[in-house]
Image 1 (tube, rainbow, N blue to C red):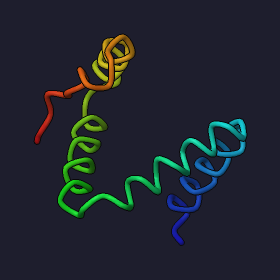
Image 2: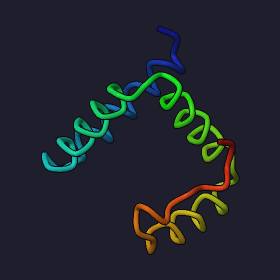
Image 3: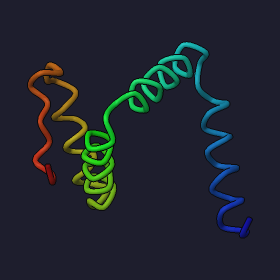
Image 4: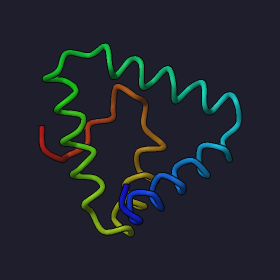
Length: 81
């Protein structure tokens, strides 16, 4: 493992440890649901996630704030589909 990979893994582990047991359980369930999706749907989600991560931090913050006030059925990011 490269030093960069090791540092990234350590940061993720630290963030995981800071989560409550309820938050961890929610994340585990979401991950399992994701794994049960067809591969095409998984790829769409990965593509949208990459699109979002590639945005400038300020734009990501604005979108998060906007999305927090929407119902799940209203949530349709305008990224790649």
